[in-house]
Image 1 (tube, helix red, strand yellow):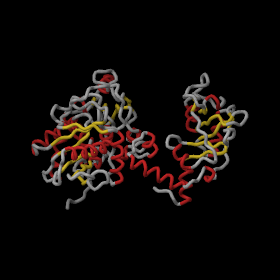
Image 2 (cartoon, rainbow, N blue to C red):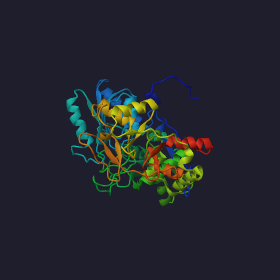
Image 3 (cartoon, rainbow, N blue to C red):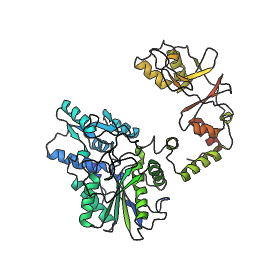
Image 4 (cartoon, rainbow, N blue to C red):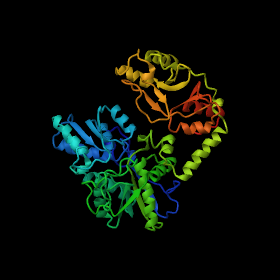
Length: 488
């Protein structure tokens, strides 16, 4: 047994486990071949990009680039996380769809310069990360622009190490490798390294529906965007060499996210791109009629923990219609059984504390702070509920000198209205928000569905004249805990 010893973060990169996925519900059904997952999310930075970052930094050192040099890093975010983990100073260029969790992690790691880029910008356009990165580099003396997509870095040794690990873990019996494709580097170098030792191995490239990397796809920057991060492009990246991929499989967002949830339930905490790749591995194994004794490996490139607001949120998954029929039925059935015909009246909410729309902002802020409220209902002169104000928004507006404590709440509140959101006061930031009637008789099952897309519910009488109480998802959780029916 290898002895344990103190080492550096960089030395822990690589040698990730490979596990069988065939026993997980929804993976091995009707598939005779063995499907294995290479757990790249178990690298210290929680993604396969740790390997890439380590090799790029080694090449920077060989070129004599100072360890204090500013690195301008483009990509979905995992490479930047890995670079930050290895102690480099960064400016990050992240696509708009990059998860908020990655942004929080980068900020926590000390990265303050984060530039968002368009998801579908084509090479050569001013909005493409390469063009933005070069413009930034011109103004930052000594900085280095790093973008895997351009193929400027020799990553052959990086992926040869990964290929050797998979060959060792499968005893050289590998019939196919399935991996998501983004920059094209992994596909190009892994296909070369694996074919050198297993000539018959098939390389299966995975991309989201509407992506245009595959050889028969056509670049279309106006196509509907996909939600799955870390895979897919609106064009074929330069680093992807022709012939690297034997077969392309496109996977829809619902299939990718539902499969990822099944992996999580099976103890494999991988991200949505991994779910897409595992779903594609199933499709390939069935279409190729693979039999018992065939072995398919799948790269599981990053962790589910990077998607707390999306993949791991039932509300978000439901709002985006990403659960398959079986998972959706199970979730809805659980909700109905939990609430058992209870209504909002059973929550025993305290009476609502309100402010008038003519009250000054300072009064509203003081009231919320004193009572530890996150928001307060706003009423008209006739005490009719007309909207609400949140503490965070009010404090931010005052701190940024957009509002003063003497200005009326009506200029900055969220107004309830059936019309689309729009400003309602000159010089103010008040907007209109659609109102949903919620009364003490509203079933908790309906309230739960309301919370799938809303954070707070204002309970009124049937005529919506008086605000009777405020309910949040925490009130539901507390109710279920008292009933001892909440399922964590």
